[in-house]
Image 1 (spheres, rainbow, N blue to C red):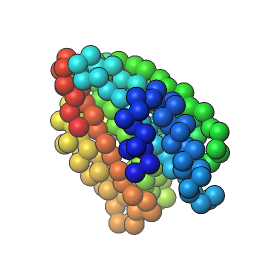
Image 2 (tube, one colour):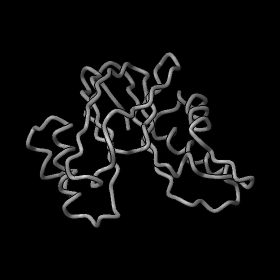
Image 3 (cartoon, one colour):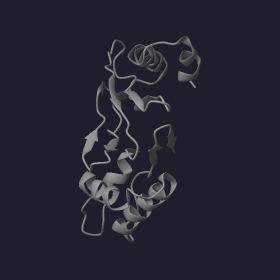
Image 4 (cartoon, one colour):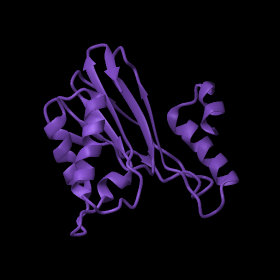
Length: 172
């Protein structure tokens, strides 16, 4: 709700996040903070810029199989009133996909107390990367739930998959 009034001002993403940070700092209780991953995608060119404010770094799986962590940005919103943020830019080629996820995915433990962890997530993404984005998201939930078995999940499971399907489109 705080981001919406700031978005139409055509601010550079780091400036937008810095202003949002100040609002959260002023209005949230001192023990609360918010993580945010803000991305801007040009669907025509595949241009992709982002600011990560303390969110678990989304994974960018390139068509060639390499994985990049989208971590550039700064700390979570609301922790300090004068936090600054950096923006990163990259290019999404046809076949590239981004998986944004909550830490509940990687922290889901099995009966032996082993977390699914980032390696498990990367393995699953590699195995099912050819799936359409909605199917990949559902499959990742299934794989994590299978890993956990009967163990009650301690946190939410959230996944967002964005896949550039051709030279002029992205699917979510």
